[in-house]
Length: 511
Ligand code: HEM
View: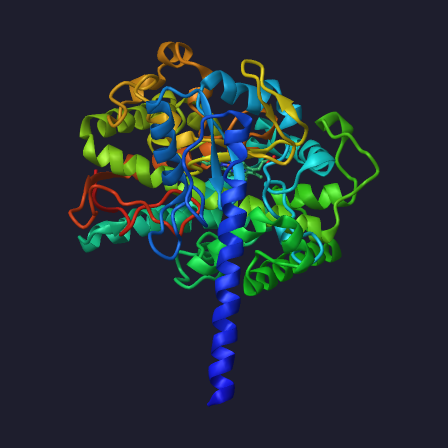
């Protein structure tokens, strides 16, 4: 009894001391922007300007959107915020967005994401790595995404469209609401699974396909995982010292085995396919032709590097595109005249191409491009972007130096809903993306794929598979909104990609 009481007292003492230290440290850190004379949003201990993940979990992109509105409302062109205790520089003015992403890119090469090549090799992929390592890898991978390579992969994409067609036929006959995002995520999982791993994932036949299950798992995070990532982000040195990993163990095991088996199978049996995996294997074996734009530097990809890149293609590729298609169909369900116009375009173009979805036919669907552009404005799957300052940066307009190591926030959602650039921003209006209207705007207020040297490497592929999916569904079915969809939308806090609570439910009726 005596021991227990004294132990409790000691524990309470330790906790109180810890709280005092955290509060004192945070208050000291929160002086950072004041000392630099940059306006900043008042933070609170210990989460800074983020919401408490254990009390009110909020999607990070939505938090950044709120901060954008607050700062812009005060007339600031840029400002300071805090992620926990880590200062972050927040850009608002489009010219400053341009400076960070393109003009002064050499100061902002990195994304500032935590990765741990030794203990968690899958975390060391193109999206998270930085510095020279990123430059080398980006140079190696860029020719993998040219329009020539997209054309080469197109038949693989169209092969998966059969499964989608069959499923929508079955679903529409049932006369029940359709979870459109889930349906499309299966389609894009099949496409990317085939293009990145050379495998037939067949998620339409196998409800519990491991690709779908692990794909979902890698893109959601519990409150504890969110906190773990925040700590890794805030204190990377401590995270490295503790060998902290961010890829769940079972996900790591699944994907590494998949890649090792695939590479071994192809190499042993001389199997050659037209997909990302083949291009990665050829990079590993230094086999790609110089005339295709490859610069051989003698350094090849290791098996672990191949695994990390295949996983990032998979993760970055399936959820972003299925989200885009799902939101597009949601808006088209609410605006039937726009839906009719897209369907008319699909039918007219396909009639010229023997009623087949070909690479050339997809390129001709220009109004569909406008619909996708407007969808990505209202619902950018990656709702904010980051960079890390890698070299002290003297601001061109203000007497302030952004120090090396500072995180930079680029608020995509904030810019996309800013009434100064997109009047009546809530309205879904593809005309905003007619050639004329597009060219009359500042280029850096619309950034669903990012911008500059670090922009999305898979943009062409993402748009291509989104157009194939939309053409396949809209040519044969009319979509309307089902009352099961919860409106107004609430944004899911546990999802890295913009997603709604309760999912999007549509009705489909054969044309
Ligand atoms: C509609 C579909 C997609 C959207 C909206 C999207 C969006 C984005 C965004 C916003 C970024 C960050 C850009 C920046 O920081 O400036 C990014 C990066 C990236 N995306 Fe995508 N993406 C899509 C499809 C794809 C696909 C299909 C792939 C691969 C097959 C892919 C692979 C990547 C990779 C590897 C990066 C990191 C690039 C780097 O850091 O060098 N994405 N994407």
